[in-house]
Image 1 (cartoon, rainbow, N blue to C red):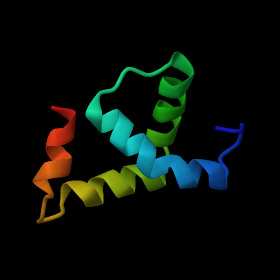
Image 2: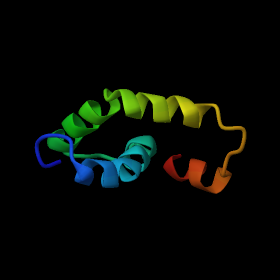
Image 3: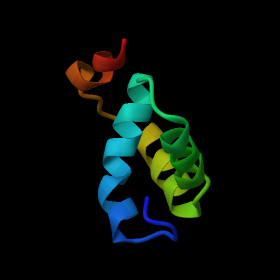
Image 4: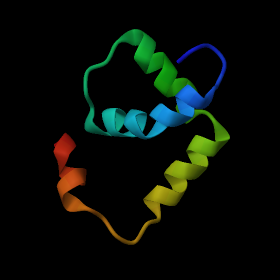
Length: 65
């Protein structure tokens, strides 16, 4: 968000996952940031771990539908 990866990016990473997952319309700058974040090894690891969770909170998962 502020140039190089920083604590600000780490703080907003959960928000990025939600906005991206809900399919909300975002600016081109935000979309570029999302792509950069999702390409980070730590983010790929986070996503892989989330996809293997055994429990789901349906209320939150359905919010993007």
